[in-house]
Image (cartoon, rainbow, N blue to C red; front, side, top):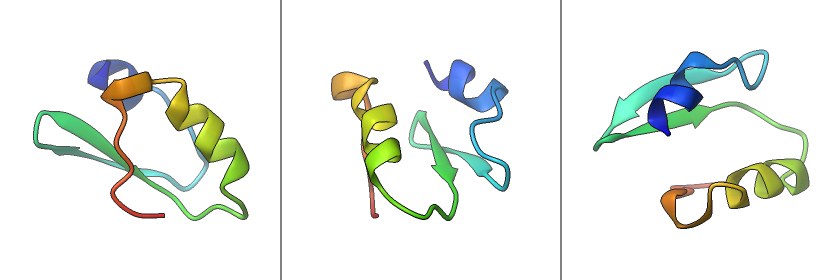
Length: 51
């Protein structure tokens, strides 16, 4: 899964970094509802370190 996230452009101003065997995607967003649905789509594999 990390390769899929790393290779795709999710958001216009995103930054992507490797971290502890996973991928961290950072971006400023206007609201969390859409991001929440996206993250939940990855199930138990997803972690949100901060809002």
